[in-house]
Length: 244
Ligand SMILES: [Zn+2]
Image (cartoon, rainbow, N blue to C red; front, top):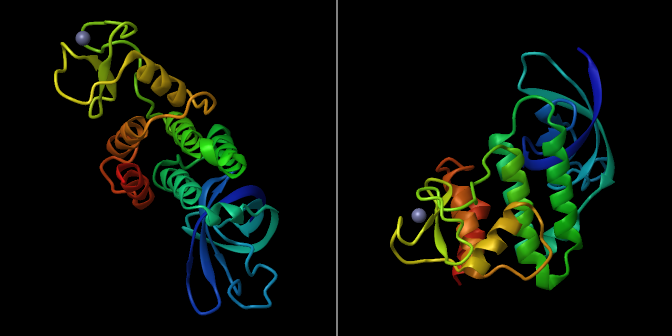
């Protein structure tokens, strides 16, 4: 029964008993892991209040081969990120990042994914209020990209039009852009809007804030592709916020 210590982000927690809880972690060295934090819900536990979603630190646990649940022996907190919980939009976006990782992370070590997650959480924490929406979209895209679900935002996927002088539409199901001739219908994006989409999809939050429609398109895309039809609760919330 080897004992391991690895950098970890808490993705999700739930109570297991009156005194213990289970943590879903993304670890740097061993991919996603579930650990039992015995006694963590006791008021005087040194782990009490530490093991909340978005927290990052060094987790030490007994890694049992062929077991789904390991026993946490220590968690050395480095970043708590509790301030994310004080702003609904930041909290929702951070939850989307964690849900995507929970559902789609590969089983083994993935340093790029770990970096994308921690970078995204820190960016959401540091963003000024007026750029939270753009930061959220960029952070979600970065994680989606690392997970291998990035859309093709080149020219029209059907006729090759570069879509630089006229607009087009995002074909959410195909994950590609199409011009108005090839894919008629409403919801057309201007060339300027397409360039903002491309910028967001490349993970760059700076520049003009994306429109509600652009954020909605990005969220729809993630829902169709990365989430594979599964309803991600936090995505649903972001979507309802955009519609309102
Ligand atoms: Zn076309």
